[in-house]
Length: 495
Image (cartoon, rainbow, N blue to C red):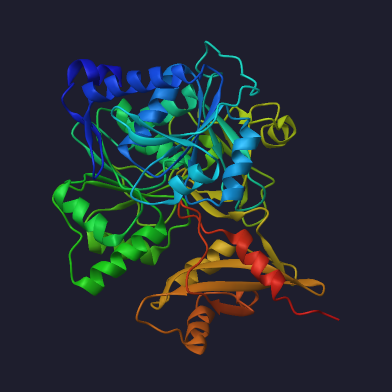
């Protein structure tokens, strides 16, 4: 960020509906906030939990913590009280902050945990928790590849949450990758609606734009009408989202008869969940630009693969690995798929206070075992076919949930879907949960006829359940663990 403070200090760096800060003002805000944190007793190596929604104020606090070499632990305010408490306890946090916003959840967490109100310059109202004097400080490292910048707790989609330690070098690498791969540059206005408490929001929607002299417009929660307004009024040029977000925006656009095309928008990125050909086509018709795809995970800061801006693809692959990141497949099956392994400057330092899990994830040669199954084409493009732990084995055949989901999502009445396995006597069944588009109904027989044209018989769902809304993390990722729990609660006993 320093080069832009020196060369273009009056350019707007971050803004939201309430405030805008230039690079010069942001630099001052970071330093004043760092001083306020120091007065509270925060030092390098402390973990500081920030319960928050996306905002300019949130960005200021996170950057101030970085100045102190304290570990930022951003937590989405929409988590439950139990989840927030578990993170504070596991992180052994020195301090917890609860940032006031247009939504009540952060305040409610602060009140419940006895935090007191304060007013900070450039930040506004914030609730400050009690100092945990017993919290142990982690060593401060000179090497940016060793010094932890952020502790990101995974959403727990496939198991218990884990604290992922991301270093300054991890996050800086993503900023450089954004400049090279996505051509983010001064003058760009980036839409910051994906949660900053998730690795995508933190690295791609804060660290990356600040490293490249861009402006970020923060929105605390996604609503299609707010996106449409921001596209026009803020002249967004770079859009990041998950498939569910884009699907709902397109649905809203059609219902309202309002175009989503603008002259300023030049790059749109999709990630966080599988992209279907139907959604890609619909997006490109609605927005008038190619929809780029990518792949990553919390443990890789998050970027591993991206399609190229100068060579957009017509398929739904996630593109080749980004420069300086190595990938390979392990235990390749006859169909060419295998577990994707990743090595490079994007790979996390490890899981906090869990050296056992770190050793399981990163082998002696530095390869991160992602747990994701992929195929690599002759041109290097990667296609993610599923999670190794989510493969459904039906009558001896491997069923990849993503393949079934892509077929379901291609049906006109289906907004989005999630497929999981259900154990039955000596076998596994394919169970589909679907969310239906507003104003439409689902004809089960017609949907099954549609699927039979696209799927082998062993991949056909044994049951299709319509749900009002699929459970999702704030990042937009569907929480399949909750769907499996719903299946267990309604399981039919077998003989």
